[in-house]
Length: 76
Image (cartoon, rainbow, N blue to C red; front, side):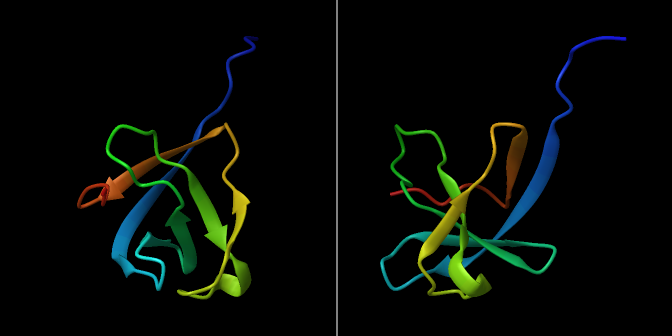
């Protein structure tokens, strides 16, 4: 038995930009936002409060979650 972490992968599909011009993504009916989409920064993905497109960023993803962006990460 090993101590390797099991990574969960989310495939985030770009659905547009919210009222703060932040990229919004969807996966399995859940809405996510990249709260710091600058090119030189790593993705900082959070859920959206009440699962609303223009909702406030809510909970950040855990370190055990890897994301892929479809078609690509939307950056500033």
